[in-house]
Length: 451
Image (cartoon, rainbow, N blue to C red):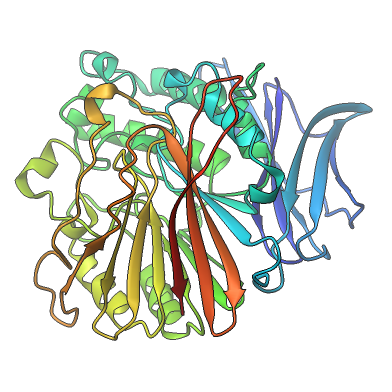
């Protein structure tokens, strides 16, 4: 396919729809909604081009307004008189549904290696979800592509910037356009709103620092070339954080969401994983919560420092000085905080009581398509306490683990939220990724009332 249509973020009355064209222009393109909505001005397209001339990507983000709350819309792309693509999305409800209505449902997934899902299992599973359990929005918490796979190639070869452009673009396009008889990743992307954060494999393992298995990362020039190419593609396909800030906020009252990227602004000196200004926005979000908060990050909070061995694998959030301030901010929350994340190639639910008396509940979903059997299929417990080391102003508490949820196979989660009066009911279901021709069956793994 030469054209892609993928919904990005939504609110109760607005939506952003991304359109991309491979080696084609968008000058004659128009995007129409059903049911009808006012057409936005044609956005100024962005353009990415490989310097050897092999690929161009023209892309645009259409912003629609005056939409109706929790209404499904179909977006159709026309180029001239020809229909070239379509997608669907649902706007946010104005408030959480009551217990007797369809809950507000969030999909959580991470770690998708397209090379290891050639039959389109993820898309097939998503396509066959029961209608009443389909997500309103999807949160992709990093590693939607593996630009450094296969590792054995990058461990023995170095590349020019031109070669990286071609390899990395092909990696993205294969994943974003994957279709076929079993649907593919494109099916999961074009059905419902998407929120994306990066993790290391949107760049390379342990980015922005050097990685043992990535020869291109051994020299500063190689890291600079790789980072520049990968960042330009991330901004083009996934989230455009080129203006600096890498956080998104939205709410479905009384539930409030804060979606933060902890990779694109990470510093090699291990000081920060997000801009200080973004951390201040998080501080304000926590302080102003009027109900439960949902925080999404690229890596778990319940983790030890990777320490010395982090030089050879990937640093954890606690390895960064900024983690201490993040822990202090969360410790002051007067409401439950549900932290949704991925990265670690297993699923886990754990919680801790904060010094304020509120709960921090960490939910992990990973992988959707494991990159390599050598780095997965093993479940790990969290540290005994959070924070796992002494942080002034953030008293450590004992971590309690949901023992029934130890999924290590390819899967994603849905997290359902419903208004239960003074509290919010949260139900978490695991969906194993299945073979084409099978029907998905969920495993209800957790129910909790949060406030």
